[in-house]
Image 1: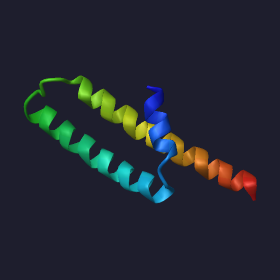
Image 2: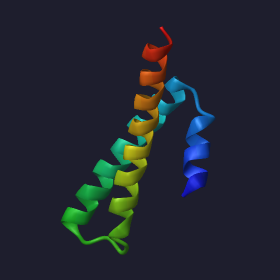
Image 3: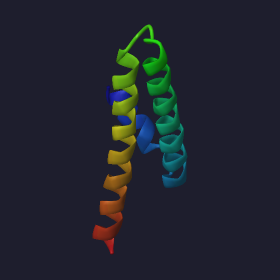
Image 4: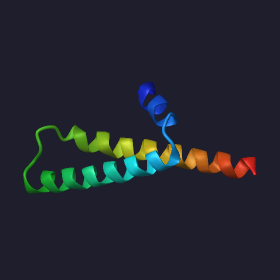
Length: 70
């Protein structure tokens, strides 16, 4: 799990925003496909949600660091 955080630390804010948009659209597609016919591994939904949360957390952490630095 630590590896995910380190990977996000290396990205810029713009790259994080792009990745967030990509993960959210992927999660939406996964939800729709799961609604129509159950997906093979429903844990994928949880993993995608957690990945979105990790990205949002990193963006918020940077936002707070930026405002504290001013």
